[in-house]
Image: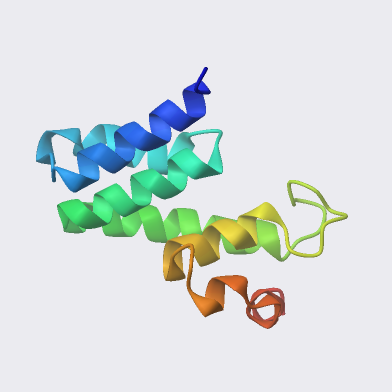
Length: 113
């Protein structure tokens, strides 16, 4: 059985691939509020495919919050992990899943100070 979060992530991908402009609000909500980072990342990518400038400000604000969380050990999803999930999400959104930058730990270090 496919986990629900995978279905939500795949649905976001499909909406981006088809450039379904009517899905903008739902995708923005998932990009900002979904509990699963895979869904959030898929929604951000789908929003990029829609090319709607209205997504810019809320996504930048969300990214600023991720930076703040990633650089504050007391706020991290897991304070004992040197490269917290928040940093991984930022890199994934910025560089994509297969880029050298996303796999380079020194990039993570530069984000934390």
